[in-house]
Image (cartoon, rainbow over all chains, first blue to last red; front, side, top):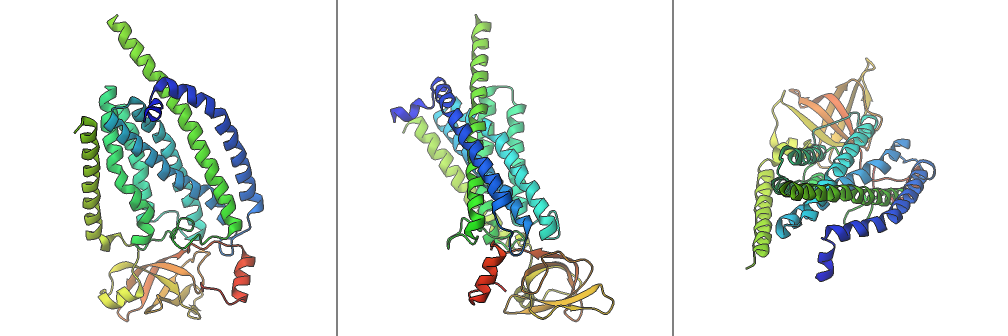
Length: 242
Length: 145
């Protein structure tokens, strides 16, 4: 228990994140280079979709990370509320713009794939609509932090919004099973094993790992800046009381 | 009970209640959340003519026929239990073919033919290279079309 709590100490976090980041950065760059090479040059064309299948190698990892970033944000928000931990609140705050970017990327690449394959950029089916709601939740969360000047109150309100939005996560994941949608059901994370051939699955998983690495690196940079900004705020407050 | 524990329970119970409420609401709106209706559902419900809805299913094998004017196409959409005849005038997506999923937007006419105003292809969740698809078909292990 004692060790676990040490990570919640901002100074120790800064030290730890600076030590780990170069390695994560290098690993991410290597994974991304391998993933792009595999996706564009090694992976075969799909028997139905032809080369358009390559859009999946960006679309699916973005969608995974859109959900994962939200999960991180929600867990951090809950931890922030329960343990009144500033570092947890700042983690949630730092994760939000990354999650929003991944969501936008998933929506955009999905539209680019949908136009040639389905015959439409966009439909209001349960999957697409629930992901759009996720994007708006991210924007609302970011806007709430901006709207409230008092830092502690902003953290609390934003955390509650993040937790309320959690209901959307299982809806996104299972929308394709609960309701009939235009979007296809899951190909990788399904009960009876992946319905995607290994020659197409390998590049997808490498890209997934690269996106996850990118998330960790950018999150640690953003969180470091949030922690430093908080220290500046505290110093200013002490000074003005002076 | 410590304050931390009380906050934890409060968050967990609030989220549970929110989850239950959402599940009930989604269940109540089930009808409006589906993107399309299958031929069986249409046979069961008896949807009146002229009402707009989306029909989804598989394009039946050997059912696609081109009209004399060259732009009208007719085919049957099936879910293996029931099937509905469809007529469409206009463009088709690349993935439209017999044995593939399709979603058509339009309405039934008086004879029970679905007059589509838009046709979308529904792609399934199977991804594989063409050689693998060919090998599966050759070995008779093909589960799709």
